[in-house]
Length: 259
Image (cartoon, rainbow, N blue to C red):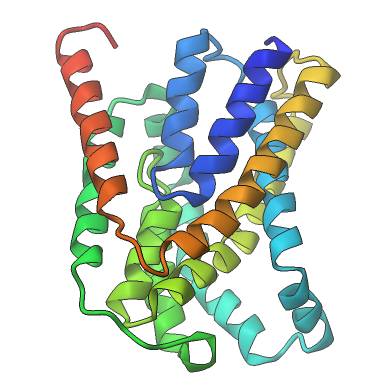
């Protein structure tokens, strides 16, 4: 893997982790385009480290608040919101790992993401902010997050949509979605490190890994800030249309045997 390929994959991960179009699905396509289907686990880990760094920087004040008050409402919201993803991940990890490697369903998953985004965008605007989020809201949003274990189902897309369904205002829906990504991304990194330690590691140069990580962190940071501001007044439908086009293109290529 060249440094240019690493840089591009970092851009893909950083942007699509927080823009609601599915990072895992786009990384699968990016690797396929570059012929890097075997680059896998170690690269994924470092790309996720990059996006974790981005979200930690954006939410540094919230993290300080959690450290100072580990049993406060914000901490409990994150714990409750993360529980569904943990349960689904532990019970069905092997199944979804197989699906991720084959990519056979990603076209349908992009279409599903678009459908949820389109429906959520039409929901009557809510007014809940971070002070008004309930534990029930967190569990509901977390349940949507658990569905995003499918590779081309957007985690940020489904959690933002879930927030809108629960009448969060649009800015808060994005804000809480990205905050909720912290334990999920961190947990995913821990699992990946465990597999790497057991011997599943690829030969990738340090320079390429560093470029991929920094690129992911930088573009992830900008994606978070941009997306929160974008959703204040603008529609999710443009992202729905994009993933619909992408999903239909993938299904067409699969039917013709090209992909």
